[in-house]
Length: 502
Image (cartoon, rainbow, N blue to C red):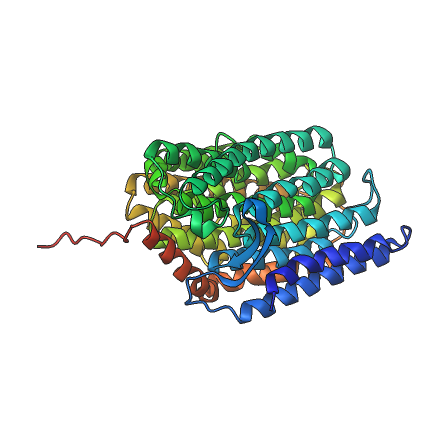
C-alpha cells in the first residue's frame, strides 16, 4: 500500500475541496480543513502501527521513474526518525486549525486561502521527511517556502512583509548552496557508474577530503539556516513575531526540524568524513546557540520573541546531540525534535490566546492571570515548565539524553551546555511570574478564560507532554534502532565508561 503517497495526497485533496466551497461560508471552510487534517492524522497513526521498529532499513518504500533522462525518481521511504517527525507534523496540523479558528480573519486574503495554504504546507511537511531522492527532497524543501511566505506576509501582524521577505531570502540563500552541492554529487555519480539522485547510491560515492568538505558545507549551511543555528538565526525572531501563533507553531515546531533532520539524513549519511572533520566547530556553534539564545530570551519584553529565542537555545541542544556521535545523543536529539514541537506549540497557542484577549504581546501587560483566567494560566505554566525541561515533563528526557550522550565523548561542551539549563529557569520563570502572579494589571480584569474549543485544542498537546515525561518508551523504541544504525554507519561506538578503581 502506498502509505506515504496517500498521506501526501490527502491534504491536497482537502485543499482542492476547500477551493470549490463558497467563499462566504467560512465555517464550512474551517470544518473541511479540520476534517482533512484529522483524516491525515488518523491515516498516519494507522501507518505507524505497521512500522517494524527493530528494522533499521527504510520502510514503506516507493520508487517510480519521474524524469528518467536525468535519473530522477519519485522515491519515498521512512525510518524511525522520519516516522516520528511525520507523526509530530500530522498531530500538530489539526491542533493548529482548531486552536487558530479565527487567525485567518484580518489577513490580506480570504479565509479559504489561509486554510488552503495550511493544507498545502502539510503535504510538503510529510514529503520533505519521506523523500529519498535528493532532487525530490530539494524541490519540496524549496517549495515549502511558498506557503510559509504567504502565511507570514498575508496573515501576520506588524512588519509582516519585511519578516516574510527576510525569511525567504535567508532560506533561498541556503537552498542555492545546497543545490550547488546536489549538482556536484550528480556529476560525481555520473563519473562513478551512472548519474543518480538516489540517497542510498550517493552515500557510496568516493570523494576526496576537500570535495567532501565543500559539499558538506553546502548542505550544512542550508540546514543550519533552517534549524536555525547561531549565527544564521536572525530571521527567526522577526518571523515568529510577525506570524500568527498557528503559523509560528508550524514554523518552529515542524519546519525548523527539517534543518536538524537534514543534518542526520544528508550531512552524516553523504559526508561521513566531513562530518567528523567539522564536528568540533559545529559543537562550538551549538554551545554558543544554547547560551546565546537563553541569554537573549531572558531580556525579551515581547512574548513571541521570547519563545523564538528559547527555540534557538533548544536547537543548539538538538544540534549538539546530533554531532556528539553517540547513540544516546542521537536518540535524545530526535526525541528533542518531537518534544520541542509540542512544548513550543503549547507556548505559542496559549500565548496567542493571551495576546488576542489582551490586545498586546508585551509581557508587562499581563499580570495576575492566575486569578482571572486560571485554566489559561495553568496551561501557560505547564507549557513553560515543559520548555524548561522540568522532570516529569517530556522535554526533560530528551535534554537528559543529549547531555549524557555528549558528556561521554565531549564533557567540556556538555558542562557548558548545562549552564543553559540554569539560564532556562530564568527565561521561563521570570515571564511566568510577571504574567501569572502578582497584582492584576489594569485592563486584565475582564479577560475571559479558555473556551471549550480552546480546551479541546490544547488537551492533546498537554497529554503528550505529560505522558512522555513519565513514559517515553513508545517513541524511544522506534528512535533507538535508527539512531544506533546511524552511529554504526559512521564507524563510531559509544564510549565505554571508565572506572576510577584499580
